[in-house]
Length: 211
Image 1 (cartoon, rainbow, N blue to C red):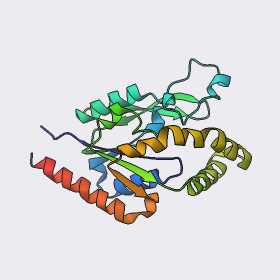
Image 2 (image 1 turned 90 degrees about the vertical axis):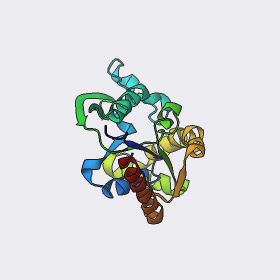
Image 3 (image 1 turned 45 degrees about the vertical axis):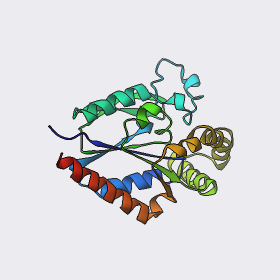
């Protein structure tokens, strides 16, 4: 019987560089042996709500995520079963009818701002990483992303950061740092930390192959 896949949780505030860390780890392995699960794909279905109500969704709050479905899917992947990963439609602010077939792999990276907030998710992880980046860098990165990629105005980005992103970070994301096995400063630029994590994962895989 194949050994249980390794689950790695990668979290940090919006703009912290957690996606860069995740991508760097992912690219260090063969595609046939590793997969990424983004928590952003698991925002709750809101098709039952009027569009005006969907616009009020706070995407930085734990209640925005369908962790029950995410946990169900992780459990399947841990049993070497494939899943149909949901796709979120940000224009309609609800889940798309489209899904993505995901096959089980030896290493699963779960990435998102609140993956360490839910104890049930933490209990499924072998390694928990927190990407720690100064707030001024995080807001600049988020501003550049939202203006370039999402067509947002500077004023709307700043207003959202002050009224939603920052308080949610302080209340829900920052406190999860205490659950991390490893804290990585400066995100994807910290090549030493990423190399150490890749080596650690490779060691665990080698140990599992001999069980």
